[in-house]
Length: 245
Image: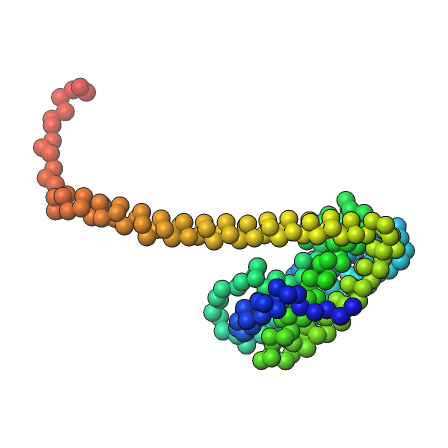
């Protein structure tokens, strides 16, 4: 099973090229990928501890080791690029060029092996397609391109074993399991998109308030200041204290 970019990623190739052109942004993305891979490795190690299937336990542990190795590779390359990049921090575009989602906050303790396999298969398939798309636009950075090519070899194995094991454990309902996992991923993607849009709208509203509402109040305050007498006001004559009233 050879990873290839999706149709959407091919259409977004000019955008991916622009996103990955900046060395600083490229470094920060690789470091973020490293965090995601390490988190996915921990989830897979936990899944290996929980499953009662000896074949899955061995495969999950191997997969967890691959994820941790990917995290180390991404982190090492990210630090190298960050050390050579400028300090300017521009637009990250994380939701336009995401990395691997792993189990995407799925609670492995609450899910059956078939559910985990279906979710993992779709996640690995999507990540492999994106990594293949990113590798195609990294002509100016052969080291990072070679890193993605190396990781894609593992992703191909992950895609294959999750599909085969799903077919072994759930031969009649594997299509349903994949459909359920796909629906869950779509819902998670919707929540991420809604959160990003809400953040952008919030910043836009704050800017509008700053430029549209504050100037009138500033002008009113300035006019009120002009009507105030200049200098100190004369003190009142002291009243002799003959009683407390």
